Length: 320
Length: 320
Image: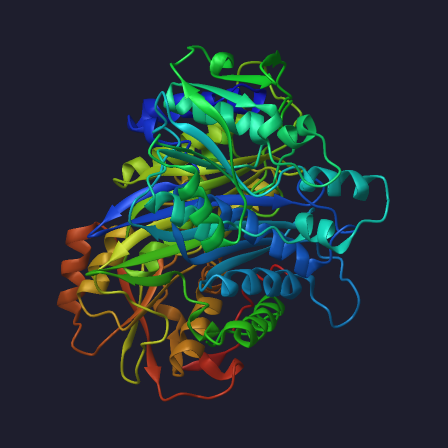
């Protein structure tokens, strides 16, 4: 498999090389979900960890929101493959220091997780509970998919589309870091991300050739698509749908948006996009085009601002 | 569902109560695996976290062994339900402080995980990598099972059986804590636990009425079986198969043994046990009997030493 640039991905590439030596099949790794054909269906599974002081802070979110956010983030990987959830397994790490009497943070976190999955017609299947130095909510999602969409199917001539409006997650994070007030809508964008399950399934069923959820930032995730599909991707900055008060470059760099970035064949028209909007209630914007493969890891994505080339913002890298 | 006594299990009971309020289906939670009927088969999934300074220490095990042990421990949950593994998802937490140049601990841990799953005919399906304060290896296992065995099926008159010899894990841990030398066999018992996949499958196919893997200690895990099945369990101390140099009471309390504790119907004979031994190469010992339900959480297990009642040792409790 091919990943975009970055120290985190270099490290993952090192791991994949080692796995390939042992089992000889690491090529399939690195998509949002692993896909397991089973009888007449395909099982999609993924794991996504949320760690205190890396992914969240306990003075920004209450414990139920921490569970809600962790589950939403994990379920977003199913959306990215066009899959629907059956349920989740949750590994909780909780410090032994007790909070206020009567309120077990572990139970509050799980209430958030359960509410999120219940809203999507899925359920909590099981879990593990361990004492730890940091709060940790590691969520494994299990779903099924009829027509899985990988990162690797984009072809020259496909258009690049994105759901929703970008930049709210980074803006909320900035306000929280600076201790500034934020509207409830903006707060929810950060605290309660909605995995785009219905949208992902709709796009998969309408011919999406490749798809990914925006967790590292649109620019970085477009690089993952370009690398996996071995195409070039040209993004028109002025077409990127931005959250109110957010500039396009900031929207491109904003991670943990959990919107979907996908490529659709040329037959997918503006009228198809209108149907998507009316059926899902979500925005869908055409932001670019797939070009002939540019080759090389960094060469995959080109950014244009009213036809003028501009430099790409960096994505979030855990090990930068 | 019913769990044995202990603060950890009280906490889990609190979580389950909350989940039941949200989704109304928490009754199924609490077994070793979650079971998902899918077409003509059943998917078995479980998650099991291994944390630095809780489950392992980096001065006791090298990174490959840490991966080996984490995967073995997680796969043991599949064995406990009679399931066979398809693969694992692994969430790694690694401190940013680098070790010796060239050796990425994350890659070494994953090499251990991959070796373990490869030996069982399964594979690494995917994962997540995050910087963390402690090393963390959270393993989600996915398998299939034709005839799942739960904790809840034990009936009055069933005999209680256990695989292997118990107490080696605790003895190894004690030697490591005291900085004493230990034989390679004893070291392997701790560092490289072998999940009893073949044994679990064999027992499931030969009528096991309930089964659990020994992670909290035989005494504590027998309490889980008794509580879930609503039976009493009488254990004959003198029949407990002990690791060399380990006393029976210590063997009963030893956690993370990853042997299987099961109940078999009266039709399962000594000759059936001989067949098990010759086909799996493992010991199988009859250590007790299921009685009419004693009622109450603590009343589930009774221990006899040559027909004299003795007190039960406590199991491992993360939050005691």
